Image (cartoon, rainbow, N blue to C red; front, side):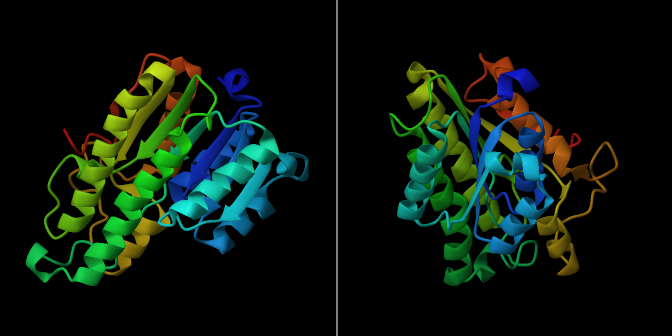
Length: 253
C-alpha cells in the first residue's frame, strides 16, 4: 500500500492529537504528503517537532477552526497551491462537548447544543463541501469522514453528541452519491471507545469512556483506527463508497 500512497497529498483535519495525529504519522511514514489543520496550535507544533527533518518538506500545518467555512476553504486552497494537488481528505476533527454522559436532553443548554453541533455538524459540512467542490480534488480521489459508533445508536445523556454524529453520517453518505460519478469516493469510519486524549478527558470528568461492554474487552488505539482510514483513502478500496466502517471492538454489534 505504501507505493500507492507515496507522493499523494492528503488533507487531515483534527490532526493535533488522537486519531488525526496517528493518521497523519502513518500517512507520512508511507511516503504521502500531509496538509494538517486543527484548532490546537500546540498539537500541530508537536507534530512538526516529532517529524524527521528529512520529512518536514512533506508536512504543511495550519491552525484552522473548521466551523469557519472561509477558513477551511483558504486552508485547502493554500495546501493545493503548495503541493499542486489534493488526492484525499480525512475529516477527523470533532468534539465530545463539555458535558458528555452527564445531561439528559431536557438539561442541555442552548450554548452546549450550539457548541457540539457547530463543530461536529457544521464543521463536517464545511470540510466535505470544500474538499468535494469540483476542481479541488484529483479524480479519482477519496474522502473519509470520521464519526462515532454513537452516530448509529442512542447515547443516553449524550443526545446532542449522538445527533451531531448521525448528521455527519447523513452528510457523508449523501456526498458519496453526489461525488461518485466524478470518481471520488466518500466513506465513514465509526470508532468505538478509543484511547485518545478526548476520551481520557471525558473519563476524568466522570463521563463515558470505559470498555466493559466491548466484546474484545479493551479500548482501541488510535493507530488501529488510522489503519482503516488509510485503507479507505487508498486505491485498494476503489469499489468502496458510501460505506460505514465500524472500528469498535464489536461494541456496536
